[in-house]
Image (cartoon, rainbow, N blue to C red; front, side):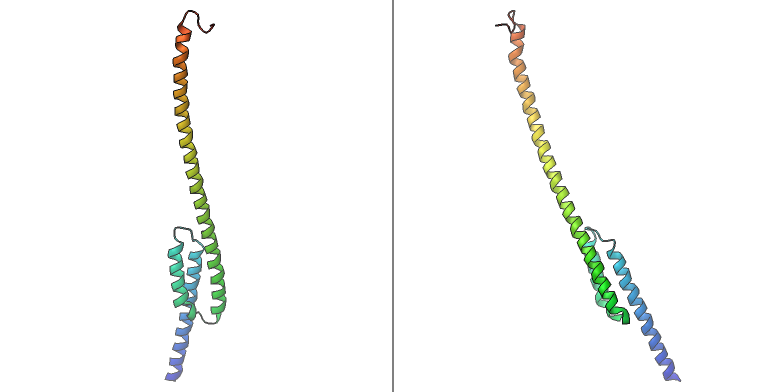
Length: 134
């Protein structure tokens, strides 16, 4: 009778561990679904640890969970890489826009100076009695 109780406890403990491990893997998958360029490396490290420590204890659903984990991780990685590329492109566009703005400001200053110089030449002509009719 004591042996049966011990076997029963061991089976129950194994089932509990499988359930806990499965939940832990699911939590890791859920976190990965919220991955972004800022938190991806941290989430990946957490996920790798969960996969190493908990996946082996998930019991009969281990292979299914592993396949799903690989699929979700692949999607998260692809999303983050795409987001990083878009961020890089946006920064490059911003850099180019600032460069164009600087050039336009420089040209505006030069145009203003040229306008003032031209006014300096025209004012004496306008002030002379003959004007511009020469």
